[in-house]
Image 1 (cartoon, rainbow, N blue to C red):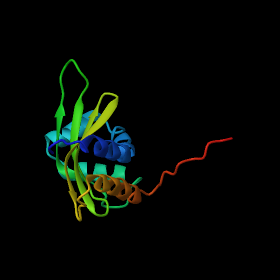
Image 2: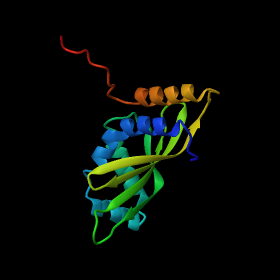
Image 3: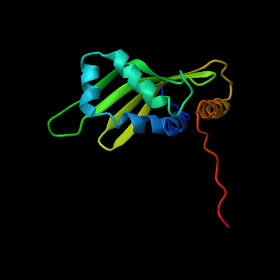
Image 4: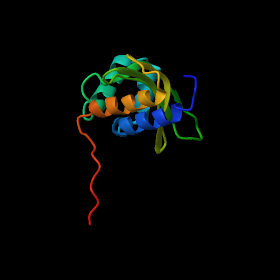
Length: 146
């Protein structure tokens, strides 16, 4: 995706939304994920992603995008990249999820709004609302104790 002034904000929104899915995927042994990628066991990877996502999102919201990669070297921690498709209502987001050491990160490859607004800020708000609506567990601001 060509980076623009809205890319960073949208990546933060998506990263925050799929944080619990990334946490679930990190529970899987890195060697197992690498083996599945190496032997192109994409159906198994899709099942793992679906299982991790079903705890947090409505069915069909987070899908394995039939691709991925890994970096495995003698002198550093493995790094696993999984292509994901996020399909909340009204938008499709193509994301690369990177799982490494004790961190995870995302990079948005492409965003497709079904009915895009001419105002990019409205599209960003729509993305955040759509991802929030697709969650099973909503997060609400908590009032401060007095």
